[in-house]
Amino acid sequence: MATAVLFEPEITYSRPLEAKIALVTGASRGIGRAIAVELAERGATVVINFRNSFAHAEELRDNIQNSGGESHLLQGDISDRQEARRVVHELIDMYGRLDILVNNAGITRDKSIRKMTDEDWLEVIETNLNSMFYCTSAAIPAMIEQKYGRIVNIASFSGQAGNFGQANYAASKGGIIAFTKVLALELAKYNITANVIAPGFTLTDMLATVPEDILEQIKARVPLRRFAKPEEIAKAAAFLICDGDYITGQQININGGLYM
Image (cartoon, rainbow, N blue to C red; front, side, top):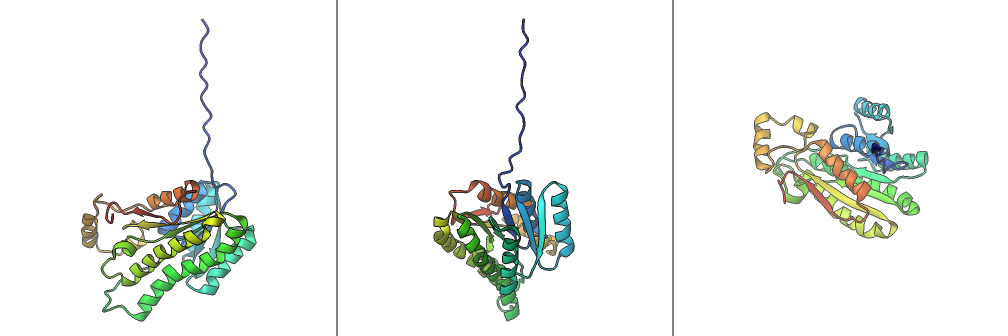
């Protein structure tokens, strides 16, 4: 009797972002770093923007390249309008296109409103909100010309619900959410989508300086009783970029149920 021969299907690994060029701002650490890695694993050439953390950015680039991905560095303080637009234009000059923009760069300067200085306010607004406008406005012409673009802006639950001591941060993140809705309306006809990811408390450098007892109090507010991992935020960004062709002007909340 003949013996049936079973053929194992060949396993292929999808790289849906092959030949796509991505810029991730503030990518040397935390959520930006995780997004850069995720996009590179899916085939994108990832340009890592950073301001000061050259060693971290260089390590990230080398890790991506050693894993078979493509990555390059573009240093620049994108809270400065000229620097932000230089970064974007330099990238476009280098590759001839820009397919994916992840506006991730962000800082905190937490203080109650009574104690917050003008400098505390302006530094956060310039880094978190203004930089997004500068980079996006510089990227739009290339995306319109190629009739394709995926823009993901990183906000925060703080911009939705507010958070004590974060008037500047909440205002910047709330502004990102509102800006993205207008962006989605204006760019849809060019096959450019724009969406927001609003993380809750995430295991990044921002939490590293918080005392342990305070961390436990914060964690107790989260229904899932843990903080997010940067990789969980990154997977949502990749979903919007790879599979979100009919998703625009939306918010994905990744906060463990902290804000619903």
